[in-house]
Length: 273
Length: 281
Image 1: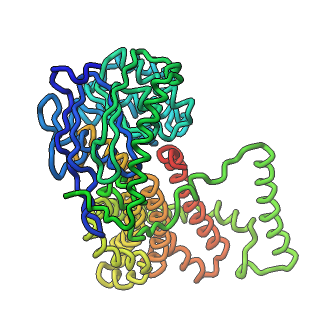
Image 2: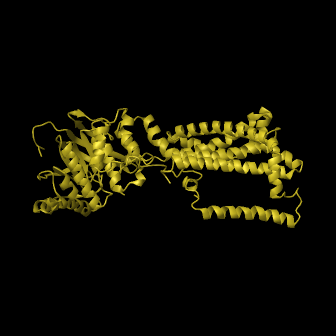
Image 3: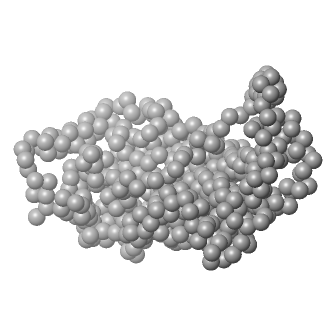
């Protein structure tokens, strides 16, 4: 919304570069990625498989170090896990030996702080999980598990929420439901959200801006603003604007894929000068 | 396969094919559950047929008592001589419990520590395997020479038999790391110790229980065996003593007690597993 305004970005990625050492030599995963995320903004990252989206997100969370470049939260460098930043992982990543209550308590146990019961109950009610506290993850559906993971991630009121393909394993109906839920929670309590997704539709529906990354080594290829007012209804997905935007993004990703596959025997590393 | 998104730093888990777990928890945690009255009746019926049939067959063929006593004779001996056998059950339990406690604690600590250092683990694993596969009973004569006929050699033998079993299974459990769950804990700023207690230990618990069960059964085996080698007390000693005096009903009464002891150990760990590790089954 106010992406390019003069306010200080909540999250700033500058020249993020990550090289993995593998058995067959070094691998450049992301190359000089830069991105500013405004406070309260929702940004999605899409890109071909293996473009380093997750690497970029994990670097933002402080779970990963960078080979070069830096991540700044409110202007201060992120050097490790940060209490202001919360992650939602691929699949719900609940601890199977804990019931739902104990799973939601987990961050507080680690941090040694007291959970805000009122806020957590409010969250549980918002996602429709009140009364399920004694259930174990195996007793919950995929959607319920992911909603529980969302409550856990928001339970300690982080100012930044990083979501790593959170709904990839869900069916499309549950996924749409989750998208609306996240927006609803976000409207209730604006949080800066960076979301990785494979679904361009999800990216458009959710975000203020969609970042398209190029194939490996991952670079920020383009950024598309999504100028629809909130709360958004699924009806916008049928508009021509969204259709054109979807196609543009798709073309950008596919075109990028094509160029990757049409250059015969091009070494993966060539692009990194 | 070329997906860099799959965080290489966390990629491998037990990739060296070193999972030497003896068995899987589900093998016993999901054991038979009794469902209906009909099943109970069938179980009782089978027991009656087997025990009664043995009784009848032994009568019909007039098998002498010193070859195989009748179930009724064994039952009578169990009742009439129970007060004589009971103290020996106590001695065996003391050896089993103290030896097992020592072996289990050492085994668990070693498993927890060693799995943190893959290199150490590689170096140590062959010796642990050696300890697992060597029957510790073989050492009992030596232990008796060194420590006499008291509790000491037996407790050492039990600890040596149980410890490696606990360790090798627990190590399999501790090695079974889920990088996602560890990343989750780290994202909340968890320390290494917190990750151990809150993630690694609970994840390893099902395998730890398997190790404890197998270890305690091996401990019982070794305790009884060690008692048969030397010394004047314990259920194993009763076995050699009764058989040398051809008191076969008493002999089988002791065997029966040992079977019940083994079953109780199994049931105990079955219940613990059901309570604390059922999330995995």
